[in-house]
Image (cartoon, rainbow, N blue to C red):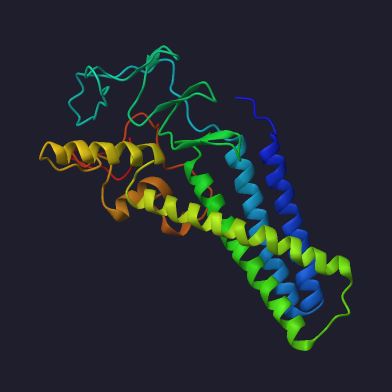
Length: 281
């Protein structure tokens, strides 16, 4: 699908650019100096974090979240432990009237993108794209790098401001102080919001849920308890297996925006399978 640079994306890139400029050329240069070893090391580290943030942000924007193939049809006679999700009412196989095709497990129709998305988590206005099967890890890694970069920048900003107060240095011009204030006003709420978002998705990954499945699970659990039964999320394979299914089999690559492990997105391992292979099918 064609991607457009929407207003939220332009705003996000502008904020990233300003924070990078303020952190490197105002905070670090004014406090440590870019010619010193400490200043150069901090500038290099922050530049690397900013580069990874922009790279993964662009990948999340441009990447296809995963679409349902036109040839897809559920095989109800498949005895290989496949879980077929059914409608809440009627018990029929899930079928999208708008796309005129069956929906695989964990797929949902996005009203903004106007199509069904595999393992849909949510539609994000900040990337003008859905977060789904094919770009979920990239989106998660972007949030991770963005949080680390924000914390690094915030620590430098606070350290620089505290040093200025301690040394009673007022030689910096008004424009520098204005840059400090604007950077702080942007960084504090941004760091808080992104940290909460990161914590939320860490929780989802540890339980192998999407945002949609979490809210569906709350209702399913209530209905199960009302009927005297116990509800368990069918795709919860245990903490380590959940991490592997989303981030990949190699822990050293968990923070890399690689997605070669994710499979087709049409079938997923469940806790009901009699045989659990290493990867998603």
